[in-house]
Image 1: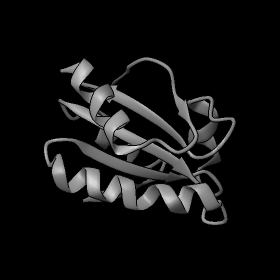
Image 2: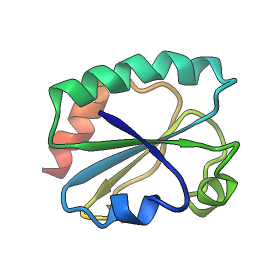
Image 3: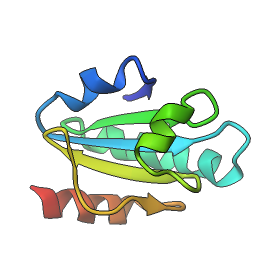
Image 4: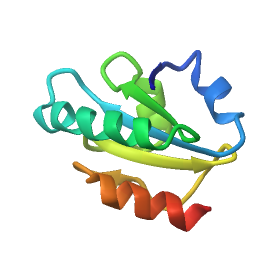
Length: 104
């Protein structure tokens, strides 16, 4: 399950223990639309990982806070702390798995 994240809900999401993945996107973005099915499949296969989507058009404060300069951008957190660099562009499922496995 993928959660829609806003500035009002992001703190609740990031206070959870474990791994959280945030996808920063926009409705008009073609690569963002191609990324959604990848995230959905990844979410089904990894129910222990929290996945959220942040619409940068309606959540500009969050995009600014996390230094989002292009979309889609994936940001990975472990126990509420940002881990590593943000990943710009479309991320394949095997790359997401590799990132998550390195955090475990």
